[in-house]
Length: 430
Image (cartoon, rainbow, N blue to C red; front, side, top):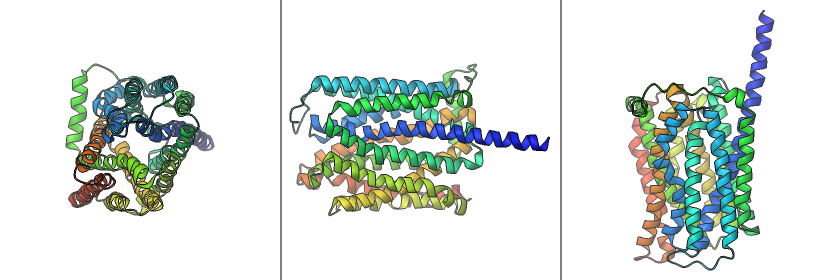
């Protein structure tokens, strides 16, 4: 009987490993698509206008659904089969990018963009609408997908699994994706849209193969949506550690997005960077993210959670200040390496904490509230960056105005670390 039990346990372990690897591969394909889109949307916007606000507006359309749709996404995640919901979202995103390829192809050739306003207003409008669709599907997909991981692996392996997932995400989002995106943009503008569509279809297929392990029965719907949401909000309000992380995450995302969207024009106009140079600079940062994904679990096993959280936020303010006055692209690449290293440490620690602290039946809704604050701050940061540059260039040379968002982000992130330092120590003593 004991031998049989050991054999069964070993078999279950191998099944978990296989299932997790498939889950990881699916995440890799999806995030490779996201990585191509990281450079694609902003770069296409820069081909239609040179106005910082209009350039920011297209990425804002991608991020705005995090503010508008996070709560409905959480409610859906707790009421539907989460696995099926993730697959549907990947297929829908594939369709949106396929339509984007067709729209860009129909609009070619593009004319030189103006300093104010946009050219090809029909194409720009189509891309904004498609970005809203893609962003909405991303909100639902990401809010739901993070609840699936605890079904595949034991609790004690969550740090290591989350670290690997964020490492793969970083490779796709910031290493392979931007570099590949830059190459595809240079070849023919519609190609990257079509490539992303194909990647999301492959991701959906890989997740579909995990149906027996990930399929979840829809939750009972005896209560109203308002009651379900109230239950989640009460949990967040009463959970001091989670509440603190939500506040810090929202502030962090606001200032980081403010700086990262400014990086595009800073490199284009202050350094004369091509799409390939911009993509490779982001790729250098991604190497740091990969390293961060693999060292976070060992760090958490040796040091207190508070120490890891503090370390992961300590460099950010200084990093943006260095970017503002960097003498070369190489310095920016080095800063991004450290920035992504600490960023993945932060995300891995926060997600693992959520997965352990949030009850399974509440995970979709509470995770949605967390993401509403964090990711909802992103479009605000993007728009603020564009407004700051336009305001600053009325009093400063254009090249100088482009670095003002970095200085503001550096100040805000440094202030956040100072204000939260003692609270982090109290809320995460172990």
